[in-house]
Image (cartoon, rainbow, N blue to C red; front, side, top):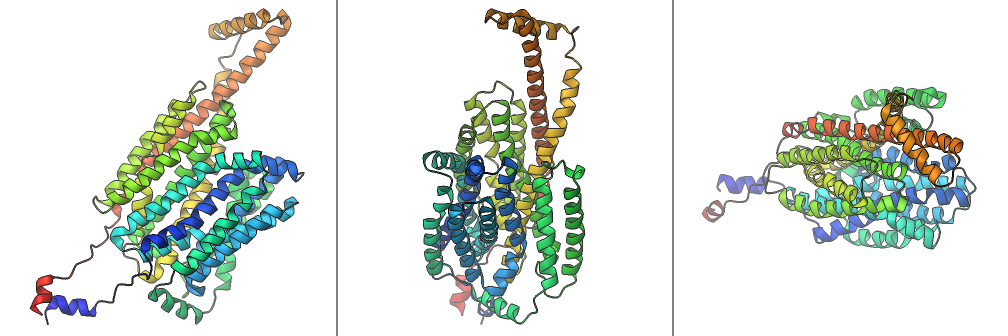
Length: 537
């Protein structure tokens, strides 16, 4: 027997799912679309919820915070839960929990009832993305994973693109309860298809049997739940509570820090950890986790900044601001398909580097935003900004798994998704705080020029006063109103400059990441059987 044949006979058989892999991909993508769509819709409907439930705007934000905290806690432990109970069973439980709690959210008549339902809904939603990515990684061979992740990525970007517009229409045409009721048919369809299409590969069934004989690390489980919960709360509520000026935020931050440090030490030395942190020693995965963290900061951060800018400074409604973002979502969908098809033809590390370069240029371009930027201009600039992101997301999602044992795919997916979501929370918190603080600095700098002796200030005041007098206002009242207008204009310009600075910092951070993907190793190409060797045998 030739060496080639001997090698082939000793190699373990490559597992293939019974159903068409693309049918499996579309099945798991359905639940992703539902979960991401629900999150973006809920943001738009928040004022309506506050009004009908008799709650203040600050109290209503707990509808979002409770979901984020619950989801963040489940994300890092979802890999362990998949190994323990079986990935298909865990995934379908998450879909069922999310669907049932969507019904409870829609039926809620009080704010506490809605928040409790959202906490449970977040627990279901948090386990969906890691399970789905692990299912795709096992269902598709290495050379086709890029295209599979492209299909998955389309749902992730299209849902937030249409979410604000759809949410505004549903809330205006019906009421906010229906933003949750629309999940029920989608969830039921997803459960039916998942039961028929999704299956656990043999290596996962072996791992599940092994896990049942292992003692549950309850201490580690408690540490990650408390630590991540307090961290997410600190990031979400920090700016609102004036960060470390609030005793509550200081306490939560200290608890998060101490608990998470203890968790890392405990898990690192545990024989059967809840979260396998030693996977971070893998060069590819460790680098990918860091890149996912930054990707989350950029993706979520810019998605928050642009609508804020449009609503606060340009006076857009939430629905109109959503319309600015929507075309960019469809651009990303197209580019996801392009990036997925390109993955097998080009070095994925080069694709990530080019994606970062394009994204850095696109975000730097946003520093040109001013108080007179037209709707079509800002829409086009947002579309340009997101062109490179699929070339970052898809190759990183594929390189994640290089050199990692097959039975660790659940852990890989949960940690990488946790990194991206944590990056999103960090990016949103840091950028919001930066804009608030830097606008005060710019305000002080601009105020130094608003003095009676300043020629531009005097010309502005004369022009504004004359215009008000021509509309029938008395001279004294016109003067006072002109001062008020000048002050408001100064505040707007200070905020505009702070947004421009934030975009500049984001672009510099991303530009610095361009060389980093080349630290990662390329996946090994699958060796095809040698026909001559087979014939010789």
